[in-house]
Image (cartoon, rainbow, N blue to C red; front, side):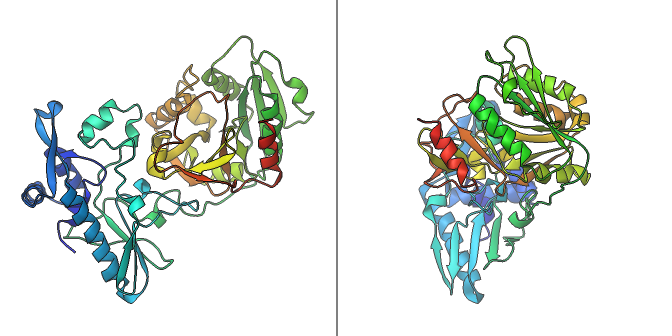
Length: 430
């Protein structure tokens, strides 16, 4: 175990200029002089190599891990796992907890596992150099500057975390450096979320257009919500109205709009007509578990947030009938802060404090979230524990090709979905 471990680990997610490295070391509690010495030692030891120059920084060299550096970093973690496992099994991970890949339970997947003084490294989790947000010849600033999703590029982190057996993750001190992030078990949104079934009226706003097969299911999922004080507002501008599919129920209303509208404008129309002081996005084509509303409303009612969203959202790919999931670091390519913006729940006051949703059908949710946060709103992420599954099909309003990207994991079954749901979704392919 070497003192330069944390400094070396800062390069795990991509190359850095000297200034970027110094800033990252500062977040770990190291002074600028210590950062300069550490960078010099890594370069002298040939653990780093100059991969490019950065024109935005006066052609300053951009350093990344050399093959020797990658091997040394992996070896150091292996040794740490072996050493720490002397008193029992231990799991290790490197970097900010929210930037590491996770299993379906939301917990980070260990990069190394030690047992009885021996260690095994999981090479598929290292580092990940194969993810799209990692560009091996560009500085951190350049990667963020050219990215459509700048939040996909994680802050460099050299922290080492260990978990004995099934216990809690704990920071492992390295060379006097302080942790720059909280342990994964305490990371906001990972604790088992509370639920509230009683409270003020919540309005679920469901924009839709010419998807009657999904509308009926979305209404069913709404009616199954355990949160009692609720209403559903169906906002429709399709060529064929779906008012005949809306049951005669005091908790469901239908709002017909003229012409063709963007999703953003339909969300604003729904928010304006909502009777509730808390609003929930309710996509017509996704699966909403019965406790979704109760789980997301709880932090708002507790006074801890003005807007909430789920972290970790697997999707069911209708054409191939397979479920896919991805680590939170990869989710950031598509969902800001690793959350699924299609699951936003927020106060009407938060909506009023902004310009509302932009007049768009793409990035409208992300832009709205930015507006709420800029107006002083507080976001709390909530662990998606069997509450929501995104359904991918040929008529989604947005498209991306993620199925071939390393890190997305396919499954033959559909976890969380009730027994009858798979049959319904499969029937849509016929």
